[in-house]
Image (cartoon, rainbow, N blue to C red; front, top):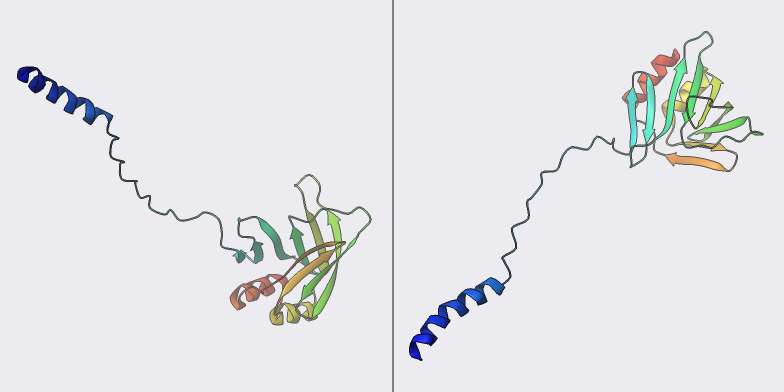
Amino acid sequence: MRAAVLLIAPVLALATAACQPEAEPEPEVEAELPSAVPEPGWTADGGDLLLHDEAGAQLLRLGCTAGPPAELVARFGAFDPIGSEERLNLGLGEEIVTMVAQVVGAEGPGLIASARYDAAIGRSLAQAGSISAFYGNQQLGPVGPPDAAQTRALLAGCGG
């Protein structure tokens, strides 16, 4: 009988070990990859200023057309066109620039608005403590202004 117990003991030990849960492997630590999504806020693209949200969606592209006369052009990717609304108000700090709104056609969703660029708009852009836009019942901002170097590049593209 003693020989039978000695033979069974190793078999029981193996069976018990097989029933034990395996040790969890150490999780692999992945290095953080740089994000291709821009930080929320303003970036520059040539002489244009671009405003992105946290997800990287472009909310506003602000630039100028070549003149004469030069025009300030704002493209809003998130505004839904309103057939009966032709005015968009661009807030530059305390100043309001009234722009003519046009529904964007085959280029994609959104809205383009423009206004003749002049020295008063240039001063308002340079001194704006915030930027906002109002179109029908839709609103963007107020958001903080772009940095001074970005604003100077825009103003240079607008002719002053």
